[in-house]
Length: 165
Image (cartoon, rainbow, N blue to C red; front, side, top):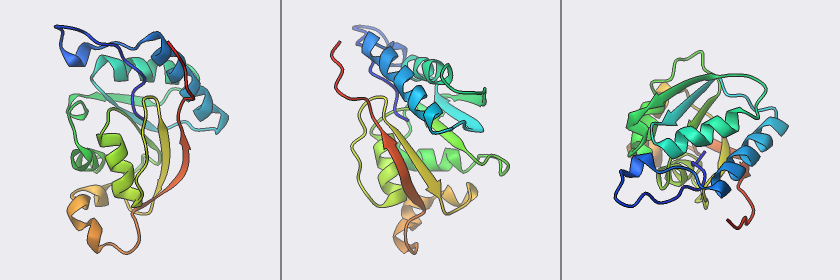
């Protein structure tokens, strides 16, 4: 999931940008969409950026349970390859992992894993089913060309409709 719409923070650190009112609404809507599909991740890896943490707070308020959450500062400026390396550290007993972070990493990750580009506006959610283990994700970008097929399938995708404000 990409964080919801954030405002500017002139003169302040980018990591402290907060959600705009539209971002709050869209994060709640994303949580409602996930809940309607019965999605409850085992583990959430959330960027340490304020807008990502606020997004997760709103999403989690709509879900029917409380997954384990790890706020990881490495996710803040990670690219898709970095994300794969971080995700490869996921314990094997975790069956469902949710990432709450940033673009272009989120869109690049989906393309890298599925072989298909996807637009990834703020608050977008992509649900992927992996055909490999968490540990197999380490270093995958360089090896992806040699893999038969793709390491994941995009099974669902949601993003907020136009919302002014």
